[in-house]
Length: 231
Image (cartoon, rainbow, N blue to C red; front, top):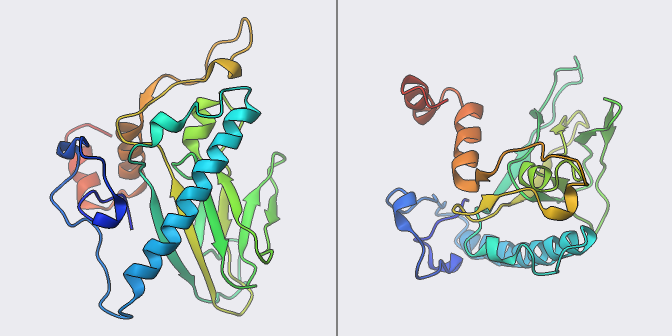
């Protein structure tokens, strides 16, 4: 599910610019089980509240006011994916459930719902390190928006999933991103004297759209954007 201002559960602000959204509904919900939508939204509300607190802790860690990022969250581009990884044979290094990538978010909270190990992260030395499930915990993957805003003080977590355990794997990934109209700029405490920002200012919605189009090369929207010279 993605940010969808047409769904009442998401409580879109009354002054939201609806011209940036296609006609709704944007999310597709299964008919069964009947309580699926309610359960997913109940989880989303909890993890979104957790994310807002975590972003405030990030602000404090950067010597910024606790509420520094709050204005960027009026209607966040927040997505939630319920994921299933069937078992795969460990026949080659390229046996993957999802390939190496970093997320377009402030950060992503991953709830590893079972004890099936499969998540791996790339460390600073270029080695893949297992991130096995820990009961009662969430994995926090730093995303590209936080990397840009902090001038690489926080670096996007490159990660992948390889389910070679022989068991089913289920997880919930919540992508916590700023509102579409927010300008992502390097925060002042992350630029030392004499240093220049590594990234240009960028509008969050435009940048995320470009990244999605580049990532999904076979999607009709990506093909059309490429034909127009936009990507």
